[in-house]
Image 1 (tube, helix red, strand yellow):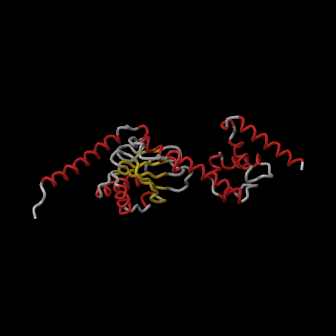
Image 2 (tube, rainbow, N blue to C red):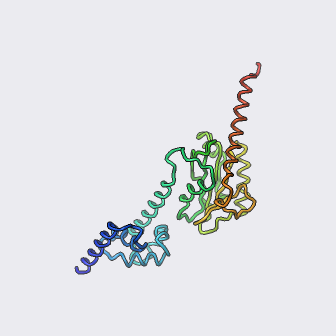
Image 3 (cartoon, rainbow, N blue to C red):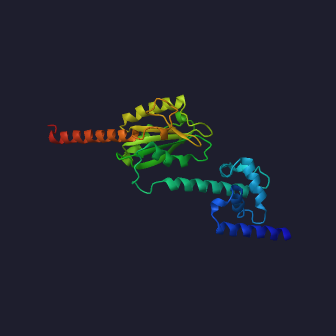
Length: 269
């Protein structure tokens, strides 16, 4: 009974301290300790928080860990493992939604802007995943969709599916992105070959592939328009998308010009 009151007093002091100070003054193990209060109401969670961070290396890795690995830590029940998984997934979705544009106003005209939008989608992933982004002529985002998991060259990108989605959105250009979980943001030979094959195929449906991003856990690189696969997008010229936007506008003007010419000179039957 005395131990129970001791834990209760400690928890109350921690809550009061949190309410009275800035949360960033708390160490990671202290935040984890407090989070565990709500799934372990009668236990000392301080030691467990330390054990979890020691086992996985950081608070981030605790929240990204698989449930079975969490349950392998002494004192972690299946319910606690599920709770930590829910916290991790909630944190990830919050991060993704924070960078999602609420409308079409943002103009994604530089690699940096596109990378900032994409990076949260790869947080904590342990498998390769690919996304395709669709844009209008002004580089406003129209769509971002998950196209598959696994090696990018084997993910089974359907050109028909891309064409149907692009047509439905009236898209003018696309950007591809995938990740190298636990690896480096350096495009492989297969990445580069696949990218240029896909680009040629997408040109046939008049949907230019502007760029292909490769993300690691902490970095990113681009594949197209650079000779050196190690060039990091944020170090590259931000004028890349300006050039491509001009190209799209020129193609649009040529299409309109051809339409006007047909209107002035209709075919005789």
